[in-house]
Amino acid sequence: MLGKPYYITTAIAYPNGPPHIGHAYEAIATDAIARFMRLDGRDVFFLTGTDEHGIKMLQTANKENLTPRQLVERNVPRFQAMVKKFECSNDDFIRTTEARHHASSAAIWQRMEAAGDIYLDKYSGWYSVRDEAYYDESETRLDDKGQRVGPHGTPVEWVEEESYFFRLSKYAEPLLKLYREVPDFVLPKERMNEVASFVRGGLQDLSLSRTTFDWGIKVPGNDKHIMYVWVDALTNYITAVGFPDIESEKFKKYWPADLHVIGKDIVRFHAVYWPAFLMSAGIAVPRRIFSHGFLFNRGEKMSKSVGNVIDPFALADAYGVDPLRYFLLREVPFGQDGNYSHEAIVNRINADLSNDLGNLAQRSLSMVARGLGGVLPKPGALSANDQAILSAADALIGKAREAMATQQLHQVLNAMWTVVADANRYFAGEAPWALAKTDPPRQGIVLYVTAEVLRQVGILALPFMPSSARKLLDLLAIPERERTFAFLGGGHRIATGAKLPPPAAIFPRYVEPPTQAAQ
RNA sequence: GGCGGGGUAGCUCAGUUGGUUAGAGCAGCGGAAUCAUAAUCCGGAGGUCGCCAGUUCGAAUCUGGCCCCCGCUACCA
Image (cartoon, rainbow, N blue to C red; front, side, top):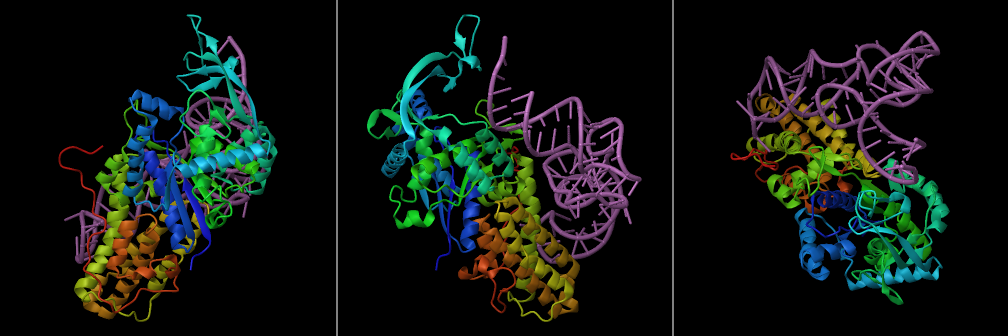
């Protein structure tokens, strides 16, 4: 019994180097959304992958004395390993070098061509090999040696190249109409404003092919031309659901995609070019583009030259996958830039995970284990305090869904930890350790109520920290089939009478390694 | 240059349609408790709400000007 389909994607990563923390961040956030939707009953298809063509891949390969093919075969497995390492639940991993994708790209090209939106012309301009960019003559100048250089001072040369063009200009109005009719097409809202103002400023036709290198997908019917890498890259989203077979069950079920999660640097490609290509090809446009921010290392942009690039594998080994996932999704408001630092993550791990949630589970469950023989008692009449904390927990799923409707992951976690804090206050206020001597039945009720709050928090934590949440639910003896959102909200309560396993720490505190502080 | 978003406690930020002593989390300080991963709970402290002027009985919240920061975009030498 599967629910409404939900198709979600990350952008495909460009594997001309090893994965960095930004790749991991996008994959983790997208995974959390995918898992959330699955637990909420949706029939989710979650796609990630790699974008393996383009001149940069070729150049990197040349630099390393490899063929592009060798380069991708070396690097792509590292991206696949990263996705696995961070427990991403993707249903497919697409590579643009795959045969299915070449067929799909050729097909969308032919559809755009059939629509009359592709024409052959000549592309000319001042080209900087170093910048990999064309410049308008006005952007160039002569340096003191008489060499013409671009805005960044790199030499430019005049090139004329035959190129196919896409009639992007034709789609300015349809795009603006789309933005008007679907105001949430791009989130966060600021990004939508930028996109709309860009389109309002007028669109020029887009150069859609190259002839100067051959690492890419050939233009159908003209082998001299290689498709512009973005045509190829964006098309991955429909390839994975069966395009060009638009009558296939998969395509009909999952397209249009519900959500493309991308970085803010590629908003234009997704919010302008991609819907224009699809409109031209007569294919439905995706429902939403969500642009996340960048991660900074102590306020500095990560870059190879500064030498502060973070290796996601090292980070996961240092802090643990789940704590790192939690940190990234809680600390950084989704859609905004965020800061990473050793201090910040240690603080989050220890304060939120170990002290607040982990310790609450430990102190309450060890009391159940020792005082009640590991068995949760049936609760008697509930006090006002009991009911207050229970209804706070019951209200969580509603708040979570509301925040998730606009991908506000951090707000879901915020709401959850507000309840965790309330539960700690409740626990301290009721003092079940004292009730053990004065009023054992009442102690049982307090422990039962606490366990029920932990159950709901545990289920809600599944999308964010899959392994740790599972551990928590194991300690509460929650049956596998009850670990979905259908069992949240007060319509269901934790079972009593069963013997719980002996409690074990779920979130160990992070203690500085004795030698040197980890970076 | 244009458009957009910001400048609020040490840090990260919330602040509805203008209204009594400007909030939260973290850090810091003091206290309580001792069930628990020395975790938890309570309490004080901490802010000229970027600057200036205006509207108003009253402005972080409205208007104008100015100064910084960020994003998108255009362009000049």
